[in-house]
Amino acid sequence: MVERVRATEDAIALIEKLKEKHGSLMFHQSGGCCDGSSPMCYEEGDLMIGSQDVLLGEIGDTPFYINKRQYDYWKHTQLIIDVVDGRGGMFSLEGVEGKRFLTRSRAFSDEEYQELKASEKI
Image (cartoon, rainbow, N blue to C red):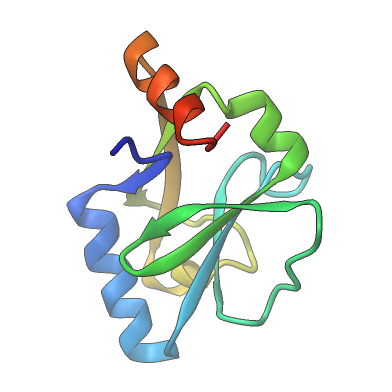
């Protein structure tokens, strides 16, 4: 099964560290002006999910949401969540760790895209 979102081993390790400190987490793929297109990590429930948000999948057993408008731009790509040194979004939990989550992407192959369409995930 094709995953719409996945995470690198380094990102999973940071998610686990954040879970130990904060409990259950959630991600939202930002498309806003303040944080560019950074994936934002919150304690579960700290961000209200609305009818215009799409559950893209899970990384590290943590739900990953994206705004529908942003999803429409990126639905042909797999999001790959990584972690790099530096400060990210001011509201994202990883900032105090001296790390930030980063979204990388790759276009789905024709076969993968057809599989997603067949499974009604597009």
